[in-house]
Image (tube, rainbow, N blue to C red):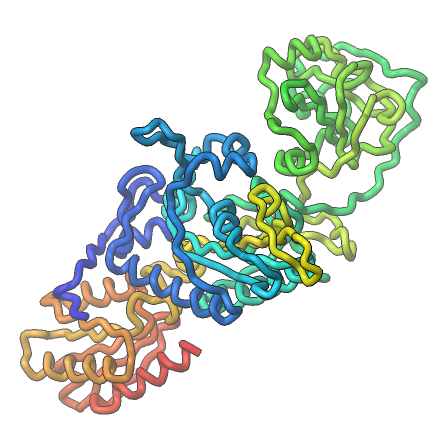
Length: 569
């Protein structure tokens, strides 16, 4: 392809609203343009990269026997109703009505629709089945941001496995796990597999593939000693034991005027440090007030609560609901003597001589014995882990890191197949409900993650497997017949060896051409100029490290092709 005929609208300056490196560089490099919040157009370069990412994914999916489908984006309500997700998913789902007043949804995922197709399976002899597609998904993100990292419309590779039993599902899950490792390695991503919450998807085991990045919104805890790794939504840690003084015979009230926070109470005369305070949160669980207790220096991971408490709706209580339930405002809340359902984090188990709110504004209680004074009905792991806490497996210090999620795999079990009556006849001729797995990779997010992991001050540094072009042939003086003809010979020779090459034949200054080539991140550059040609040579330069050499013009294409083919492997 010739640059002079291509639409590559590079920009010199970063977009004003961009924070993530991938957002800045994909806009500046002419890969994407924003239509509205959370919605982006892929321009020709962006489309080329996306297709190359899809090609890598497709190859690894088909290597494990997956068959490609294309299912509709628009779904009828009744299919989602059968699994209960029409109501439970909430405001992230785009809903609409057609001219006949029928409820429809724009698909945010396709478990129900693939399960519906699977109702055509009849016999165990047809199993196992692994199906996949590349399809547009729609999610009404409350805070779309960071370019392609958090959007409302995106392409996802979603695959689904159908098996007769749990052993079959385990095998399909493991094969996807290994396929994902290969995919991300080929994309140039150092992915970390972590335990994760299944969230709205349901099911049992769930693993996310994460890339460390300051642009991410997910945090993980990992152990360099034993390999333990988990999303904060699932991560646990051991805690150093705390020795408490014996509690008095009963909690003692004391005034705390103006105290509204954990920090206020820690600094108040007669108060207590955060690790000796009890934090009291109020949640509405299916319309009833429930108290959630944590140590004062710990943070609640709300997803842990959602995952462990069975309810149709869980949300934080508002101020009016809090006062109605406890008679006080946040900052003075506690669970001593209340007639409400109380859930406590495991870190509070066995603690004595603690401090908590008295359910009277401006008053607290000291000398609280958790198991004696608090009506705890459920003990759960609810807290967020912290840097340096002991690993739950080996005891070494945990590290925490900000990450971008690039893939997620789930063992769904029979949640969807039971609801949609997906059964086959087993070896005994009896009906058996199929077990199902679900496996996703967001294509646009993968593109952005590659940029986050592969860029420098000059622009993007694409790995050769996903680059929009593998080589750019830069002609420094296209008005010179001899120079232009030499550039075209190298260009055509590279094409003849199966290399994806861009010929920069624009009538621009050399500096402009070099900056553009570095910005869009082409891995290999061959520069053809009158000075080098006088000695029968062209200049070769590698984008990643700036290394290069002069090559004989007649051997340049063959040599560079060898470099490219070596990187493809």
